[in-house]
Length: 100
Image (cartoon, rainbow, N blue to C red):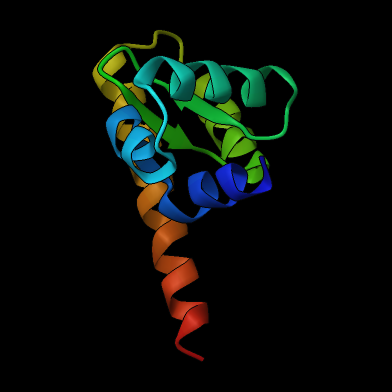
């Protein structure tokens, strides 16, 4: 299970297919495992209907929550862009600190 968690955190955005190949299990088993990890709060993120999992740290979820609270009306494209911006910003910060 810890290997799964590390994979999700490191990749950030991963498809169910990628994980099924990586761990040699069915796509349904991957989906079930991710749902279990989400339900138990061992990881946080979004499991999209198209088969992608997007890992979000607690800090990113908090930032996203603040963004949502500031809006009167929320539309899906705006929300998706906000998530993408958070991920990009987080990945840039991680890459920068890795180069030190």
